[in-house]
Image: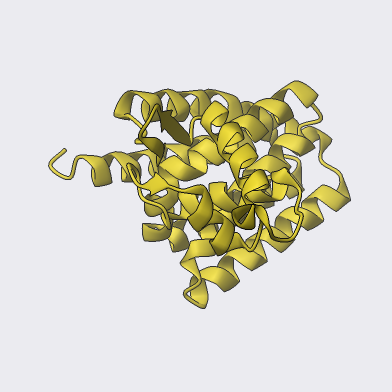
Length: 217
């Protein structure tokens, strides 16, 4: 079939591309996604796109409506609050452990991400901020030395980036300044300070999200 012609690409690459565009707001909540349009956008055949949409439906980024099509899911306020609450519990624990267990290589990656984040903010490439932010938090989870915590954060990070996507760009400078402070505490091996700073960071980001959602609050 003509519609299925195109370069072969791993479904994982198609999943990542569509997911990142949803997180960045290229595809708005409620927008219909078609295999043909996505295949053309990413230069792939319809096969990996079809498989990617199945994966993204399982992850909760899209929903398939029988006989209608596939649409970007509209994240409910209750779902967002659940994700934010989980984050506020898990990530300070990760930071405390990371302060004790981090390696020089992990500190180097965190420093590189902070530099990349500042470059993106200063150069106005704000669409890159959610991805860099997610990676910063994932590396902290990896540095905790706990595979369980690392897995939990990896599973949560993409959804959390989606919740925060707009808020992150609105408070981008504050966010990366807070990242610098967290990194300094991790470098110093100060578990209590790292945990406290990350908890404050999450609280500020959550407050910004809620103000955007309910400006009158």
